[in-house]
Image: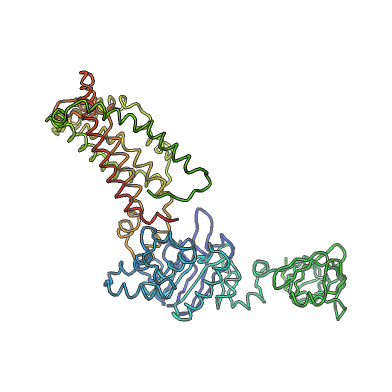
Length: 346
Length: 276
């Protein structure tokens, strides 16, 4: 089932949660709605599910107008952040709920629930109550419950938000696998960019109730469309300077060739990622002198705070192997170059 | 009995010992004295005493009216609790405070006030008189007084449970295709049941033992509007201590059995809460 949203608006007590959003999701896609808290992403998701009513705009499911169709009739599966399992029901009854509502026969229900239990790897847990399950297990039951009535769309609201890192990663892989097998159109909300970058084939980034960028993970990461995205997705350095002459901005010892459309004297902000700072011990080419001020171990990479003179400093990240081989340490004189950057007018 | 592993607080043995001693002093000792006094009667005397028609009529009224009052409180108390938890309205704090009033008001004051209002010449009693319904000095009045004093128990036991009831649960049911009615009956109400039973039993227990507010509105007509606690007082006033304790023992037995049964039902209903 495809999802289409046209000029959707929602205001809560004067707060514009969702402003004029339009989007279209193809049937079978796996899309992430990424944004900071309060950006309106959950509200958008809930309106698609029929849990909130939009102030204006249209929602089309499989091309059919569904703006005011009740949640009950949308055939949309919804997974809540805090599971929202029925505490007084067993795992079996939780998953069976959507089927009982539809008056399916006991035999059909049993077969379906058992299939889902094996899908979520919780066979043998049917008699447990939610309080007897771990967070990850509860969330899997919540997904199974949402999938039971065979929805055409699966919506997940921060599905892994309340879980610890290890479990999150497992469930991430699991959701990917589930989507590959079921091909249910899936839209999930997250504030965790790694989750979005890793799982989704397409990411919609929301901020202040609007979609700021819509693209593949690579597009979003390498070509941020706005200031906000440049700062929000991935780690970045940013510096404020002004255009020195047509096609060039200078900041400290660094020279940034920029688009000639910027006018001389215009204030700009330049973003560059720490891993796009190329650091060597020996001067190679086009590099500037720097001194390592601080070292921070970050697992696969090591981060350095580089003093580049004039009281200015930048962050650089070097793969651990390279850093160890080069013998980088605090106080060492090195050479640095910025290999990729983005310029936005201020 | 299920002994949980000791948590932050040390000394299971010490605290258990204290609990038993404390309960013995406060609850068991007076009860033992009650039973001891009763044993001054012979068995036939005892049976005579506790099964005389007047006493039997009082049991029916006391337990019957208490049961009806508890049922009514369970329904309307739930509505009050729901409104207080789920909605914001002007004067909510006042309403919230009003709920506790039956706790704080001396029961005699409550009784006199209710009688004044519901008596045939009272402001509300007047309205019912032409319809041929009298409230004060009838079992209806007794029930009314018992509803009054039992209300806070249901509201106050349901309130915290309703507060912890995630509204998302209802949304989840709706998104799974359930109707509103189905959601309320299969999702919301069942998760309230353990607390509801507690509220019901507290309200019931309070009503069974209530004396102060009832004696004014009931009119205390033998065989008609005489409650068991009043009979006990009457016997005491006639220096029939053994007779009074005999009835007391019977009340104790019935109440204890009922509460035990209610606890058992609650345990069954609350199974899903056992492990956290």
